[in-house]
Length: 440
Ligand code: 5CA
Ligand code: ZN
Image (tube, helix red, strand yellow):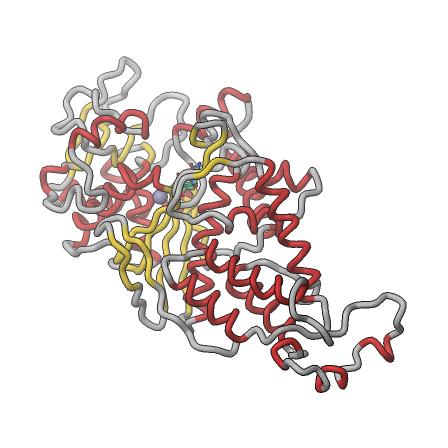
C-alpha cells in the first residue's frame, strides 16, 4: 500500500510504559491460545483481534511476522468439562478448536504461522522440566494421595529466580490474593513457597498421562507449556508475548522466569502486551462463569462478522469494557456507511486518511482513533462537500455510470479522486481487517 510506514509503539506491562517495538526483519509474536472446552466468546475475540491488528501493523511496516499460538488441549478445566458432559476430552478439544478457527476466519483474523498443541509438545515439555530439576531450579514433591503409586509432582523453585515479579510488577500480597483463583495451589503442603508453580503433575487414576522419562508418567503444568512452546518455536527473547490481562499473573510471570531458568537469559519477551478484560453484566466474561456472548451464536443469528469486528475495534485494547447489543447495532450502522462510501466511483482524496489510520494504529494500537479517521473521510464522502461527485444511480446504465470525465470538471479536486474509494477500502482491509467490498 502506498504511503509512509509508522513504527509501532505499544504499552508493555513489565515496564508500565509505551515502548517502541523494534523487531528485526522477522517480528516474533507469541499469543496465548485457547483452552478449548467451550466456544469462543467476545473476550477471546477481542484478544485475538487486537493481536491481529498488531501483526497487520508490523506487516504493513515491511516485517515478516512469525506468529505462534499454543492450544491448551490438556488442562484441568478441559478435563472437568469433559467429565461433566460425559464426553471424551480429546473430542471436546478437537470440536472446540475447530469452532474457534472458524470463528477467527469469519472475523478475518489472520491465522498464526503455527498453532502448537500441548498434547503434541509433551515430550519437549518433559525434557525442559527434567533440565530444570537437574539445574536446581525445580524440586519434586511426593504425592500424598492414597491412590498415588510413588510418583512425584514437580514444582519450580521461585527462590532461584531474582527476576520473579518483573513481568507483572505485583507485590507478593497481590500475587497471593489471586493465585488460587487462577489455577495455583498456594495451600499445597510441602511447597517451598506457596507461589511455586506446578511444572509436572504425576499421573492420577482416571487422568490422561504421558511418559515423562525421568519424571515418570504424568502431564505438564500450565505455565511451562508456554515456556517450552515459545522457546522451541521462537527462541529466547521474542518481540511480543500477548494475551488478556488475566494472564499477567501468574501465567506470563511464571512462563518468563521458567524460561530464564532454562536459558540463563532475559527477557523472555521484549514486550508483554495485554488486552483488557471484556465483560458482560458487570463481570469478566468467562467460560467458568458462563456469562458468555459467543461469536458462533452471533454468526448463527446472521450478524455480519465484519460488524462484530468493528464493534471490537471501537474500543481501546487497554480499557475494560462491557458488551451490549447496542455496540453491535452501532457497528453495523458504521459498516453500512463505510460500504456505501467506498462503493461510489470517486471520493475525497484518501491519502491523508490512510496516513492517519497508520499513525493512530502505530500509537499503541489506537483502533478507536483509526476508526474515527475513516469516519471523517466517510462523512465527507457521504454528507459533505461532495458536489460534482457522481452518485450511484441505479437508473443509469453501465455505459454512463462510470464517466470519470465528470471528475475533471469538479472545482474541488479533493472530491474527485477516482482512486480514493479503492485506496481507502484496501487500507481498511489491510490495516483493520475489515472487508468493505466483496473483492477486497
Ligand atoms: N490457554 C490459556 C492461555 S495459555 C487461556 O487462557 N485460555 S482461555 O481460553 O481461557 O483464553 C484465551 C485467551 O483469551 C487468553 O489470551 C485470555 O487472556 C483471553 N481472554 C479470556 N477471557 C477474556 C475476556 N473476558 N476478555 C478479554 N480476553 C480474554
Ligand atoms: Zn499461555
